[in-house]
Length: 86
Image (cartoon, helix red, strand yellow):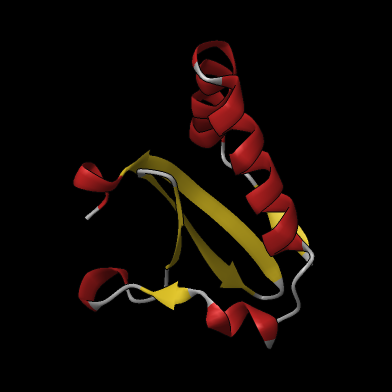
């Protein structure tokens, strides 16, 4: 599937690469893993509830990567600490 990474997440990843290279690599691997999935295998990722019900989440250590699927494109929204994600 195609992926889309907004500028805000690119900036976060750039900062993360300088501060914590191991977490940066874990996030990269997870993004690659998600992008290799098709629409049926994406259903095993957990959906959020209520106002963010169109988003899915995946935990990477104490951080959460939020993404959604629209018209065959995976849009990675943000990477935030678990305490600030919801």
